[in-house]
Amino acid sequence: MRVLTIMLLVVFCLAGCATPLRLNEIQVIGSHNSYKMAIDPDLLVQIAVTSEPLAASLDYAHLPIADQLNLGLRKLELDIFYDSAGGRYQSPAGLSRIQQPRPYDTSGLVHPGFMVMHIQDIDFRSHCPRLRDCIFQLVQWSAAHPEHTPIYITINAKDGVVDLPGFVQPLPFDELAWQELDNVLKDGLGDKLFTPDEFRGEKASLPEAVSNGWPRLQSMKGRFIVVLDHGGEKLNQYIAGHSALEGRAMFVNAPQGTLEAAIMILNDPIADFDKIQSLVRQGYIVRTRSDADTLEARTNDVVRRDRAFDSGAQMVSTDYYLPDLRFSKFNVEFPSGVMARCNPVLRPGRCSIK
Image (cartoon, rainbow, N blue to C red):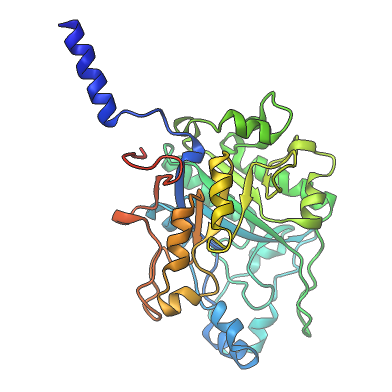
C-alpha cells in the first residue's frame, strides 16, 4: 500500500508538480508613464500646430494607479523632477496658453521634493503629482492586498530643458538629490522595498547574486522593486561611492559585466530579441516595451507586442492594457486576459501564478 501511494505521488508530480517559481521566472505586464493623465484637449491642439507627431505621441492617458493594480498590472513607471525648494512647477506655462483649461490642482507642488510628470509645462497632469503621493497610494493598495505579486517601479529622473519662453528650467540631479530620492523610497516603502543589498547578501556583486538565483516568488509577495532607468552620466552618479549598489534603494540599468548588473532595460524587442532572450536565460531580469508613441495602437500592429511576449522579458510595458477605441482594438494582455504568467523562456508549458 505504501509503495502504491508513493507511485501515485510520483505520477501526480510528473503531471503537474514543479519546483517553486523564482522572481525572474514570471512575466508581467505594466504601464508606461503610469501616472499620466490626458493633456488638456485645447493644449494638445496647440502642440499639434507646432508638431503633429509630437501631439500624436502624447495623446494617451492612464487609469489611477490603484485601478491599474486592480486590473493585475505589476510594473509601473514614474518620471520625476527634482525641486529642492518647492513651487518650481506650481504654475505650468501650458495653463496660461489656453482660455478655459480643465481644472487641475497644483497646490501640492508648493512643497519641496520630487514632482511626477511627463514634460514640464505641457504634459504635467498626473494622478499623483508628487512622488510621496505615488508612494502613499502604492502602500495603501499593498496593505489592502498583502499577498500581491511583487511590483516593479522604473524611475526616470528628468532634467531636460525645453527651450521655449516661460518654460521651467529643471534642476539637475546631483549627489544630494540622489540621496534624497533614496531616502524618500526607503522611508515611504519601508520593509516592502526589496533592495540591492538584500538581494546581494554576502555576494560581492549583483551578477554573482543573479547566478545564485533570485528569491522564490512566494517570499516576494507584497514587495516592491525599484529600478533607475538611466545609463550614462546619471547611472555613474548614482553608482559613485556605492559599488555593487551598496546602501542604495534602487537597482539600475547597468550593462552586463559590471558589478551592478541585475536588471536591464531593452526597449526594442524586435531589434534586441536575441539579446533579451540570452540575458533572461542567464538569470537577468529585463524590461521591454510592447508599443511606443501610440504608433502600434493607431495601426493595430501586434508584431512588437508579440515579440516582447516571446522574448521572455520579465516586464512588458504598454500604454494599452485597455484598448483606446479611438484608434483600434489594439491592447496588451496575455492569453486568457491575464496580466501575469509564467515566463515562456524559463518556465514554458503548464504553470500557474498564485
